[in-house]
Image 1 (cartoon, rainbow, N blue to C red):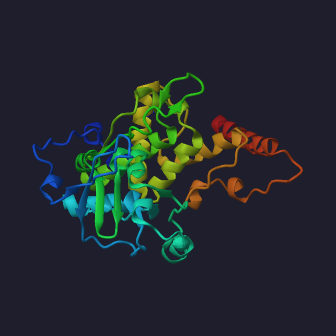
Image 2 (cartoon, one colour; image 1 turned 180 degrees about the horizontal axis):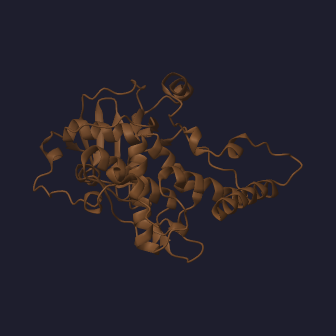
Image 3 (cartoon, rainbow, N blue to C red; image 1 turned 135 degrees about the vertical axis):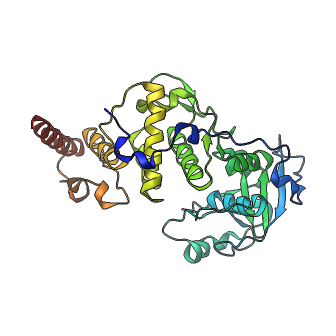
Length: 329
């Protein structure tokens, strides 16, 4: 089966996806005035963090002690230090930094005044040193506090070269219960692929490093984690969703050699995920686009007296019978 032909004009070339950036002798960010952050002697193995001043407009002015992390912080670094255009951040993530003496009574006010439906706030509180030691990816070792931008040298290098790699904190932090192999959480594997595709779409280069080949096997990726990243890719548009789908299939084929999904497009992949979740007796994923959700997956009501597994198993069997009937024609 040819899986990519229906969308050939939008299909990224492998060489484009794995594009190796030109290695500059002097990184661009090094020409920007900065200073090194010094931690107290009580901090064991402190990270090397650099401090810059920035003038990038922020989503909102947060109270002292609260900072931006994630996409907002990355965008500030990309704009201020590298002079590059950015995508609007999907989520606005906040964090309270103990070193800056935040007023914790303002937590609720921050959520009420600055949060949006896509925002994320978990009441996160951490020290500055700990913050830079427990990020998910190296390029997320960035923090914005007012007009100050904090970042590790490694994060700035990866942002400049558009590389997504697990941090030392996450690398080897997950064990596959089937094989006992140690690697990166599947959720982060899918997130890394999505970020690489977003970089590729925006800058013409983007690659994932530091994730073992076996982790791209289709049977190593939980359906929910795959659905979550596919959904977030769809939130960026159909073109990016297709790039994500094409690269996901390509990586999985290289690692596994066969495709357990009968899907020739990202839309069909979304539907296949729904059906496989139904077969497993699980609540189907609720995608952002109505056409990605089977009618009976979104409209079904579970009888409280009926076992959830049996209910969804019946729906899955109905789908299988319908497909077999269609195949007979």
